[in-house]
Length: 353
Ligand SMILES: Cc1ncc(COP(=O)(O)O)c(C=O)c1O
Image 1 (cartoon, rainbow, N blue to C red):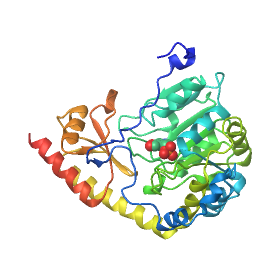
Image 2 (image 1 turned 45 degrees about the horizontal axis):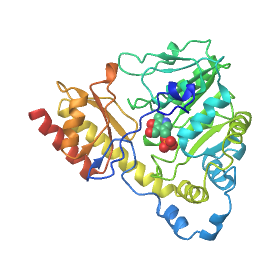
Image 3 (image 1 turned 90 degrees about the horizontal axis):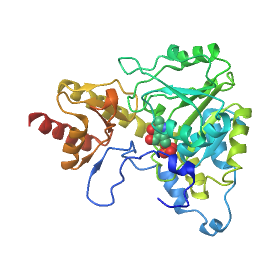
């Protein structure tokens, strides 16, 4: 603490990201990174780039990357915004559309950065409880809020809502801005991007950190109608003109163009997830029907924090959110088959103790 801190800085409760260990050899399944490397075409772009060009600023609006994203989804590049990771994109989105006079709603159990942005930007918020089975029921959301945000699939539950249901909701709530955070949508869900041309109250946020194995480059995307995108850009240009660096723009564009590699990697992760889910269920664990690159599991009779610590002692990092109804759950990122086999063995050891 410093005497120079503002009152606001004193009042903040920052988001706590999963541990990135600096030493020790761990099987790292705590931050939903991809166990496979990025597309070789993205790596090649970085290797072959003209490094002298780094003396110049990057394109402020990430045109190259925006174009690659709009081509991929067959939409206009005016419907795309790119930023420095979806965390930053989400922050700009919250600032662009909500303020102290605009209450927003999100599930009580979802990405825990949403309340952090609300506190930072002084946006009032309501947390709507998930159903008993941990699912989101959009009918539970009040009609008098300016915005609603949820992750689909949700984090950390992995549970997914079909776009058909989201579309019905968009029609019913045409005066509410609905933000769908699709960080995990590529692992078996279907994106709502196709709906943005028809619904001006929909904004979709995605990331290259998970399905495209580029967490280290920091690339996030928002897709919405051009007026929404213009609003986000106004905030971006009032904060940081060049959020996406040249290396990220080049490699990100190459990654999204490499559809074949993307399909191979995501299919492999889905296959490993389904296999592991079945094994966990056979072992008696409670496992949600995750459509993400992680499983959300409860080991009967073992408190979540203890299970996390026991796995850590065996060299495996997973995440436990020690709060409320989910305090006994672990969120385990899907790694390689070999890594998941070690997780299964370690959980068997813990259960036998
Ligand atoms: C639901 C959700 N949204 C957004 C993010 C942020 O991703 P990034 O900032 O790496 O793009 C995460 C990261 O774990 C997430 O779980």
